[in-house]
Length: 183
Image (cartoon, rainbow, N blue to C red; front, side, top):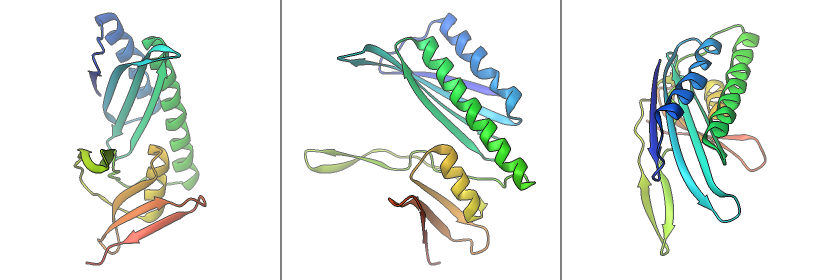
């Protein structure tokens, strides 16, 4: 498993902190087989009330195409790493329970991570981030599961049967909507 650690917003990571991150998050390999890589982003933010806050965001992907993400903040970097590790452990456990109850392993998935995010600036929307990803065929129920695991409100995937690109989204009433594109 590759652990890639990046810092943002001027955050500095000492060797001791880096080894703590690798040790703590490396333990997740025990709980989930086939973790291919893990991207860790560490940033420092200044808040008026709380002072300096460390934010840790971890995205891990498996050989089967499943992507899990967690993000936590705390006044201390070590605490934020511990919180994000606990969150990912819960997600892995929940994911394994779901697949075990179904009696099958999940098909490969290609979830959208952040998609295109727009930020209003002087009443004009500007594209501030672009993500590129491969679409792998899946069924709608697997897309729902991937969207829930990521904690997103929408998910783009390629349908197994029709081979069309579909967009799954969460409605305000808690149900799901599906946009099916015509070929």
